[in-house]
Image (cartoon, rainbow, N blue to C red; front, side):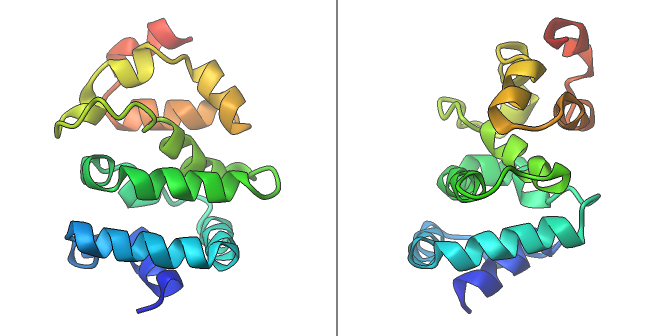
Length: 153
């Protein structure tokens, strides 16, 4: 499967994505493919977010992805950031990647820890990603950060 094909399967398959990227070897192979064809991957990512602007891309929101595929998420963030300013849809991807910056959290509850939201304000993340603060709140609300809402205004 090509890098483009694999990425599409992983990002858009709601229930079966773990069947496609399950081992470190496969992740490394995928990274090499993606690095070799960054222009095509950028086109695919923008195609996905343009076609599905209201869809939250699951892998970027699931702790498995944060735990095992941090390098892939950061690479995708860089690819997206290397082009034109992201539109509202693509911000969903870019924002989530940027929330994965701290690699010291390696446990399954990483996305539930207050550090992610508490120590980085929604404004600072939004400014860095070039997107609207409401995008940050979408993730904060969806992934269990309700109790920190007042601290990140």
